[in-house]
Length: 398
Image 1 (cartoon, helix red, strand yellow):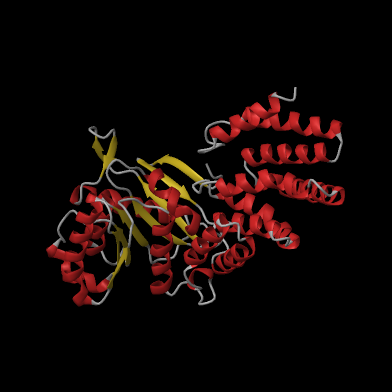
Image 2 (cartoon, rainbow, N blue to C red):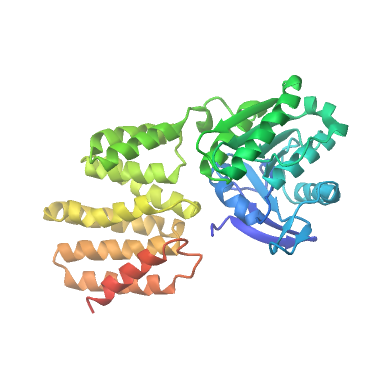
């Protein structure tokens, strides 16, 4: 788990918390309160939201519901029965952190229903509300006129039985709310009933646009990076690395904090012979994936595995790569998680084997084995097969 993504149990609240990059107690931040869906938790919701909020000067606080849900072995929301609980949680967070007075409320599924109830009931507390696939209950008509005081974003997909039903309910809600001219409707084609990084990006982009809290030059205003990433993936699969490099370059120009984009940029840079671009991005890609383990690491696996083969035929390139990696590793080790530390020893060891230095080869492989063996489940989130593959390879040389 990220060092700045934490679970807490304080003052009667169980909640997940994500702090911004370079957090300082003296700075003022945007506060987002996030409400999970049925069968969810604060932690399950915070993971896909944190990678973007982390670089938006935003504190994410995601409490667990206050109503026990024994059938699902979790908690849920009780609408009126959760009102005082959430108002109390908001006051608690404001007492702990220096935050902007305008809070954004985010809710997924049942949390989206709870959030709409809260925002319309107390618009002065929740002036911004993002509903992600929250369409199972009716609008609380008692507070309907308060919709003119809240900026609302209705997000849904259109795929899968549950999400199609949700979409239709949200469409009906939007028809009621549109007269207040404060609600935006957004439908992501092909999206199912879940929260992922695409949902996070489009939702927080809307907030940046309507809140006026971010300069026009801020990265999230620059355009849709996903189109360039997906184009780059198509070129990459066709082994067209130069065009892939161009697309990934555009992707990270728009969104410089998207870990898969940075990893692919670094990968296609070295495949295209753009060594300076590779060197300027390689360790950044490891650091961003360390900060956001929510993202898959397939791109990193491919890049690390390719490096020895790409330089193996040229002794000068091998020595240059060893020097670059050892220096970068020394400078960046404290910014990497345990998994990447293990990978760096493994990679450098392979390069020393190509350089004919058996002593350094074995030294680094022993270090890699030690660090791989020390990993716990949190350290190699979704990477057990890769860890075991590397350990088997090391064991074969002993």
